[in-house]
Image (cartoon, rainbow, N blue to C red):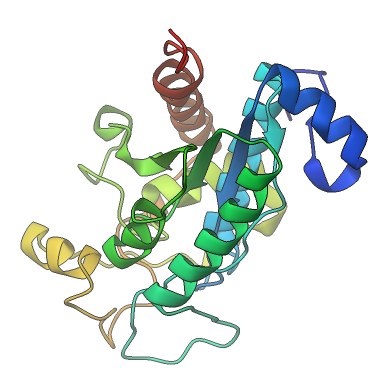
Amino acid sequence: MRTTDRPVRLLKEMTPAEVAAIIADDPRLIVPVGTCEQHGPHLPIGCATLIAERLADDLSAEYGVLRAPTIEYGVNVDSERTFAGNASMRKKTLHRMLNDLLASWEATGFREFILLTAHDHDPHQESLATVVTDVARVRVVDVFGVDISDLLEGQREHMHGDEADTSLMLHLAPHLVHMELAQDFMMTREAMRRYRRGWLRVPQGSPGSIGKPSLATSAKGEAIYRRLRERISERIFLAPSLED
């Protein structure tokens, strides 16, 4: 359940005149960027998208910032197995798509873009971080750049379809989680580093997730979500404006 009754400012539901009026007062745009990728047999393929969307909605409603339509696809981690439904872009494809979209929006008056993603795969993040604009500011928000280690029991960091992802989904969309199918699969810290950088595929022996989803709980997900939202609010939305 959302924590505010204020409406989400959805760009796709507004007329050009309505958008122009908001831009005149606040020229920021939140752009959630997801993935279409397996997160284990217990989680939906759109797990990262759903997390980013929920944060984008809550932040849009809280701060009155316009929210763009979600980009549902990203740069997936290569896998040694085939998972039905997966769809990935190449890094340069996502980069070019974002360049084109932000250029179009910038031409209509937007002066700050907040690219919000819940997928900490380096090639995916690089696609976002290297977007070029003429004058607008681009801020890439890696949701899992927020430290949540003290909220986890069996891990020290976010992995993939893990204790963190599963807890968040149990809090945000419990009807989409199949805990009876969750399987733990751990990697060394060095292997995780190589995995995030795109130097290591999801191993054949993995169920498609990495970490300990068996330790996930809804209460833990609520605490993680609160931490993510508070930290992003502090660093992005409550920080001094460009004019200041």
